[in-house]
Image (cartoon, rainbow, N blue to C red):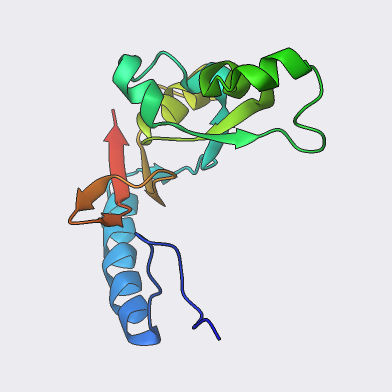
Length: 150
């Protein structure tokens, strides 16, 4: 019988660890609020059209693409499947991906909400990245980021 496990590069946080993390994040939030910053949150998943080309060619290769819901094979011919070309398949079968960091989603947020934002826009984000960002000895760790824009 196989022992239950989690995917490589992920971790669980115990109640004790969460208490420490929450204390730290709450302290950060209190300081940001003290200086007039507001918190925003963007989805871990973005449209690939938003993400592609923003991280350079190497960055595009690192993006985690998400198969379209439903029949991801619709619009793909048998010949294309037989080609076994993952790039071409990904273009046709994936419209969404996990963000690599908070930069591109924040830029999308500003453009999308530009009529509702007063500049300078004092905001912060404390969110885990959608894509693992640190790799060491077959262990991948996701980061949490707090970023500020004036």
